[in-house]
Length: 314
Image (cartoon, rainbow, N blue to C red; front, side):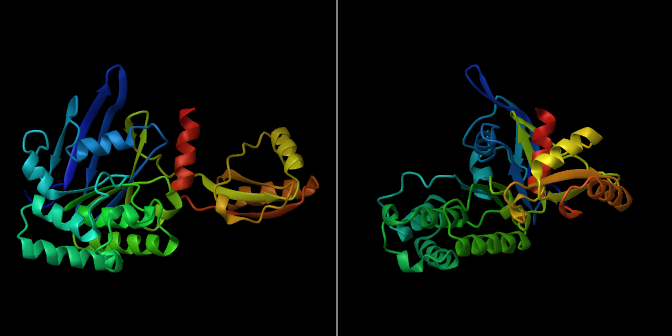
């Protein structure tokens, strides 16, 4: 493969299950050394798309190339480059953690000694050395997720596909997993992560692909003429009435985890052109007798972009 070519490229993928179209027109590109988020509501087709990328479902239409290999016609070559972690651990519960990894290593034709060494290395990396000889069914949900991540990494893939990788992990394990993924990306691995925990993805990903009704959608262009602001008012009903009378559109709270909303109050998003317009809105609200507690620019993160896109498609 020539330098600069995508690690994985999917073009116009479609997949139906009888009359139901799960993925309609999905395209994405993964670059070496980058972590990309796959974001969409339940039922958007994320898991079906990832199964096609992993070579586990044949597309009805479209094409996939993994390091230049077609998973449909060159399955062995494509799978050699791919690491796949589903959102559920699967039917490995009777094996110990070490046996899970050495079995996977054998499937990828690693010599026995090399497979054992790789298993020990990965168990230490994901914090499961103490459970090396514990059967998988004894592990907690979060521990199984860590073991699933190790399983996907056994053969040192160049492309990693992760479906809800940190589901069930405690906060410490999530931080370690994020660090691990960033380190893998730094080593040149291309990573696609599907997750509903958008705040967690913020500090992990370099790019995002949005999927809605089976179609990939480019995130809306960040407009320089509109800045999202977050306003907190101590009287939510009064503010809603005043905003409606002024023709001032209000949006969902762009930073719902920021707190600072008293009982009976509200936190809303406003799209304002600049600080001068923000000052005007603040002046007019205070003049109208509204108890405004805060008005400040809000970050344009993944959650805010996702909410905007959901509103646009309603």
